[in-house]
Amino acid sequence: LREAARDYLSRTRREYPLHYVFDMSDIEIPPPPPPPSSSS
Image 1 (cartoon, rainbow, N blue to C red):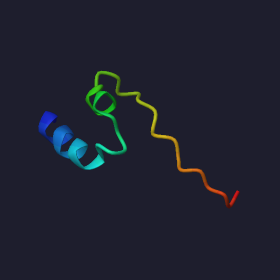
Image 2 (tube, rainbow, N blue to C red; image 1 turned 180 degrees about the horizontal axis):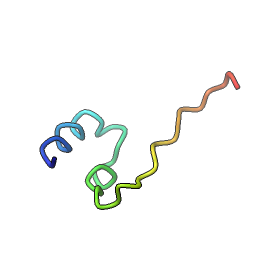
Image 3 (cartoon, rainbow, N blue to C red; image 1 turned 90 degrees about the vertical axis):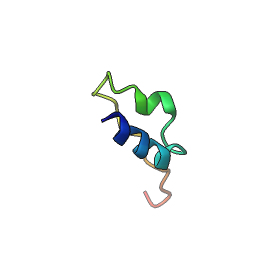
Image 4 (cartoon, rainbow, N blue to C red; image 1 turned 180 degrees about the vertical axis):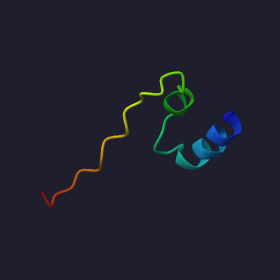
C-alpha cells in the first residue's frame, strides 16, 4: 500500500501535502475542500 500511496502521492502532490497523504494512520481523513464555485 505504501508504494501505491507514493505513486498516488506523486500525482496529487500538488493537491495533497506529504503529511496529509502519508497520515494513513487516520483513515477518517476528511476530503479536501471543494473549489469555490461562483455558480451557487
